[in-house]
Length: 129
Picture 1: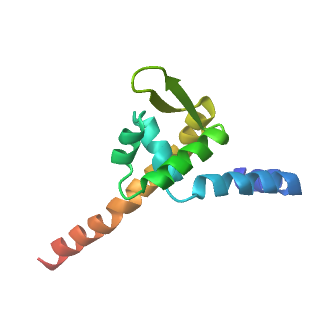
Picture 2 (picture 1 turned 90 degrees about the vertical axis):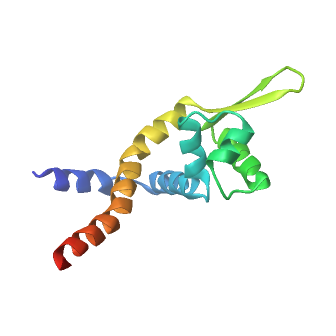
C-alpha cells in the first residue's frame, strides 16, 4: 500500500468533532496578523513595541487584541514584571513553539514561492540576451 493511500485512509476516520477541531485550528492560525505575530515572537520579540516594530502595518489596538487572543488560546504567555513602569512581556508558549515548528515547512514553501517569480524573470532575461 502506498503512503498516499495510507494517508487517505487515516483521514477517512476523522469524525465531525475532529473536523471541527481541525477547522478551529486553521481559523486560529489564519486570523489576520496572527502568523506574523507568532513569527515575531519566535524571532525574539518580547515587548509590545518589539512586536509592533516586527509586524509592520498592524495597529496598536489590533496587536493588543491578537496578543490577548493568542494568550487566551495558550499560544503566547504573558508575564508582568513588577518594575517602574510595569513591564509586560509576551513569549511563545510551548504550544506556540510546537505550532511554529509545524508551520515551518509552510514558511519555507512561502519563501520559495516568493523567490520563484524573480528566478523566472531572471531566467527570461538571460534567454532574450
